[in-house]
Amino acid sequence: MHTPKRIVFCGFQHETNTFAPTQADLLAFEHGGGWPGLVSGDAVFEAIAGRNIPAAGFIDAARSAGHTLLPTVWCAASPSAHVTEAAYEHIAGEILAGVEAALPVDAVYLDLHGAMVTTHFDDGEGELLRRVRALVGDAVPVVGSLDLHANVTAQMLDRADALVAYRTYPHVDMARTGKRAFALLEKRWSSGSRAALAIRRLPFLVPICWQCTDMQPAARLYALLEEIEAADSADLSFATGFPAADFSECSPVIWAYANDSAVAEAAVDELARAANDAEAEFAGTLYSPDDAVRYAIEQSRAGRRPIVVADGQDNPGAGANSDTTGVLRALIRQDAQQAAIGLIVDPAAAEAIHERQVGETIRLSLGGHSGIPGDAPYEDEFLIEAISDGKIDATGPYYAGFHLDVGPAACLRHGGVRIVVASFKVQMADQALFRLVGIEPATQAILVVKSAVHFRADFAPIAAEIIVCAAPGSMPMRLEQLPWSKLPVGMRLGAKGQAFEPG
Image (cartoon, rainbow, N blue to C red):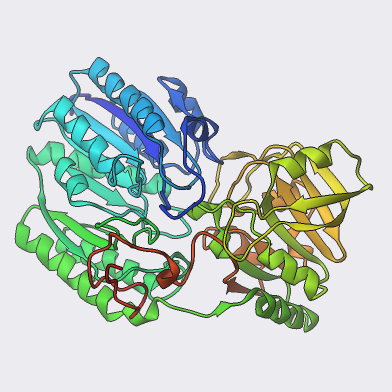
């Protein structure tokens, strides 16, 4: 029988697009952006129980083993530009105060994203891990879970005993990753010392729409990862990175832990060779808005429906504001029928709609308020088809167990195009976000989703085909379009892409 142990834990998640228009302040973490809002103490258990969140999986595994869990804070904010210094210091301060109050402890677990940039630190997670390590000392194991899109830094790997990343995109294994983090903690306790660590950083960035693990080459590489683990007794992770954070350690990273350094080195070498060999495959077809809509109309007329169009460059899951109008304009220009698009996030428009009645016509200057080059509000008259409070339970695998709240919402109609308008940004990764205003996704000819990949988990089963559109947005799929300044010289901007040079 093992001795029950005391584990203090926290969650602090943000994916930072340093090119995005809006920063994440404390209110953004209090709201949560589709995730549970900022919670502290025992309220953390209720907020995340049964949800596809790493901490939920870690808690289940640790409790099953008879250990005591001591929560500090759990919070997340919708991806955006930098986390403000005030928000970071407030939340980090609560976390550290909670850890200090719990001492002595047998371990610390951190549920992190891994791609947080703040207004005062390029490496938000590394700084938090540094502070936690300084507080608990070198003898207390510190483990963490990371997003597949983490930009894993040297400081993060140095300050933690073990870090483990998701293996699916769409991220349907978040809770399972928390359980893997607990398994690494048990290995750390058993060995009594840190495992040998090996790291490889890849020399190219991967646009997020081509990181999908349901597609090649990612599907093949993650299968190989598990084969290597099984054969070599190494614990291996591959974070394909978040390619919109302008700092020196933005890149895909492969790392491994093993009892023997030679085993760890061999594991990362094998996977890194395969990833480098597959570089050219991390690419695909990007449609212009009009080409995407024309193709979708042709296919739907031939009986292939719905055609799902990913408006990935305005993906709120990558820091965009989910309000650009490029694809909306194309739908109307091309006279699309039985088409639906969402979410167009425009709080002022939603408020104006809620002052009217279903069946009325309203003139709006809709969306386009983020100042994205090539974008502008779409001004016209719309029929109000439905009004909603914006609250609904998720039904798909990505937001499994979540109660979604997009604030005052509505369905507008313009000809054959229906538009889901919301007040708060949430990635269109669940069919429920169409249903909340009365649109049944499976019956549509064309569905436009403000998402890059996560939508696939719920929409792929009903889609005749999925295509990716490059409309205006703050998460370009052609990475050379971003104004980089801090990347390592020579880092390739996409598969076999242009090499970065300052200036």
